[in-house]
Length: 259
Image 1 (spheres, rainbow, N blue to C red):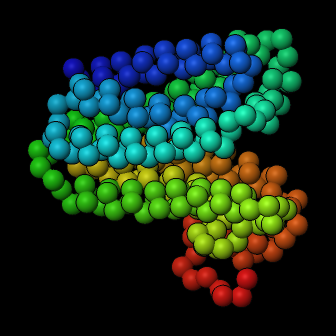
Image 2: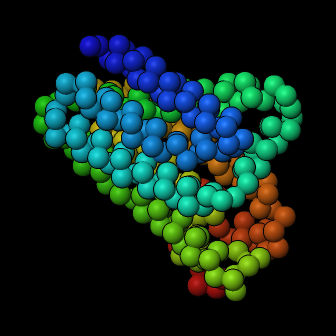
């Protein structure tokens, strides 16, 4: 199979899974379950690519394994965070806005759209599994290094925030220590770096897929990540001071001891 034959086959698989998820969301009246599936969707896509791509087997297996560790951790984290809670405010707002037509429009606005974005962002995974040389390269090592840095920021940031919120003494307070002293959104920054790491595996033959990590970074910074969360956080006491001292996305190199 050619690159594009595999890619469009994967698109069919992704949209099929998103449609099944959409049908389940209608039953439970919660479109937010798509967030839980996001990481797992990449895992399924990566192993689909692995099953049909004929590239350097050790690189392909490593890349699929990295995506699996990242994706399953993210899905489990979001499941734990959202389990037993009402539908996320974003989807509730859309549900109220669209009223009676939301049952079918949610497939378009939420499930199909996220499925297409997932597919686009996954392009370097297929390129890395098909177009690289039949040996390890410098870019494989660079990709692994970036992935490790990204997962430290993403998983570490999520862990620190979860522990902070679990302490009743911190209710109403801001987390400004640990990784959160370097950037106001270490988890979003880390997510971006992970995908630049995945892209590095594709560099020898698939540099044209650079649009994928660029798109992921743009979404995290300007659409569904930092920009959306900042709107609600700006009203929190002390957040303006936190903004003046801590960058929103890219970490600062030195952290003042006077917090």
